[in-house]
Image (cartoon, rainbow, N blue to C red; front, side, top):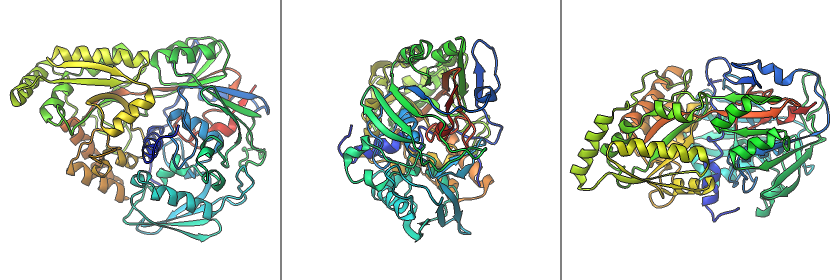
Length: 549
């Protein structure tokens, strides 16, 4: 195995895929697990095992505060942001998860086996697994769900090499491909790998009454306030002592978009646990008595994405001017709360394609001013544009910092902010000039294919290639990386992708996103999944092992 609300169709599937297959996954590396646990009021890194000290206790409810609400939980057409994955992972199991080093391993599947040239894969499912409606998990169910993804105008882009899906046994599905795809199993770590019961796919409204094979059964959804699920008494998993999972009686999820209020809800014990990417709040939580904090900082990149199919960023001069005017070190110092790491590409250290020097254009204010002047000479227009972001205070502060840096180089910058869901729609429709985003961070570089390849660009409608940057060198490198099983070939291919992205500057790297889970001392079990950490932000396989003392 290789290391490392419904809207009109098809937009619903675009956003579903956009926020499902990659955004929510965190990155695995060849190094030791990089998740860290920091007990409250203790400097430095603590022992991850401290979260799970003691014998698991049965019963109780864990209440989670999440950063936003998700519109529905249909894995085929739902708009899953990170919060959606948290909710979905209580209801659904993924076919595949990742281990502590980011390598795929079967989960709801018992095995995934390729032929010699990786042009066919056979999925064998676990026997005896049932859905919450009492129907069995079978090859026919999985094949039907995968065909629905394949027939989707957008999901198809994530699995475009799939040519044929055939049931070859009660629990076996054969997937035929148009070309070699050694890393295919990674696509099943997240939303495409969630398996819903067929009963919930017949009626669109069932997106808010989800049925899966997961550790908890859907109970109630008070939209915008609370999502509740209760123990699945027939769950297939058992712990290492042979006792049936899950331990909890129930889980509840509450959307609290404001990061400070989300932290407050944990500190005043109105919830038991939260997930947050807000760096200031992570520092605040780490200093609070009675709070445990698990952080992961090898995942997504925070970056500026530039729309390259319209002025001003259809010109390399403008893009490179922005790159040279961006002082990422100052941004990390001012916004990173001492937690964030530099990012020089979309690959993290230890991952295929990573280079200490990936050709990132350095902060150089004088060079930026020269390029601004060159742009004005070329076009007869000032280098002027609008930067968009989300509406939370951290994002607005980052906007202001970027505006001040870029205007120091002679640009004219306006600012706009939107709710997270609206921002995503603007990105995929290309209705922006420059935007602050967080993305990438997949357990294998191949999963970034959809975000970067020219086949993901639709000039008339939607694009998962958010910058709409079309480059034949990047396309060829991505195709080599996808179809080769040779780690050296793949490493060189992804290094090429990073170098060209930095030279052509459709994206400007700022820092690596830090995610944290924080809980009261009574909550245990997170971080004990097959992946061992927060490696799969999407497929929260450890939901089954949560317990409360």
